[in-house]
Length: 214
Image (cartoon, rainbow, N blue to C red; front, side):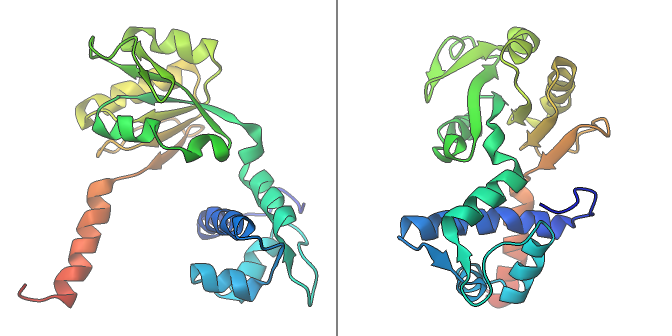
């Protein structure tokens, strides 16, 4: 592994999960060796870009042979920190929260969803995909007790900042926010926003130009 002080661009970091997922699919197909050309064709990225991205982290594969799929999966997984088995919690068990809690790939990627929180008395004490739903009043207690590092916010926009504040106070280090609102968090807290409305609106923009008048 190369010097950790090298500055890696966000674009490169965002491509690493694509490589990881595609390599895992290739492994399931029975491939043991894959070239940068083959990998690039599967995800629509040039082989030059793939080689450039990976070279930032070390020497992988053999010239004229390609990459050993299993080894590269392990190496990229370690670069992404997926081997660390992060404990995560979900705040808000509405329709979106319920769907996320039932996402089957969390555990296979190294994320342990072990707690969820909601204000609805009808949900508290129930289980969603074997994950207990706790009352919001217990958030700080459970976060600390279970050593949860990542909080996932799926509450309505007006409650999102309060949920973020409580997660941070309880000790989480990263937040994955699905609420359609800008959150204010300290500089040492990593925040990732997923705004579904922006994605759909962008899609509408492009389609409206491809399908005028329909």
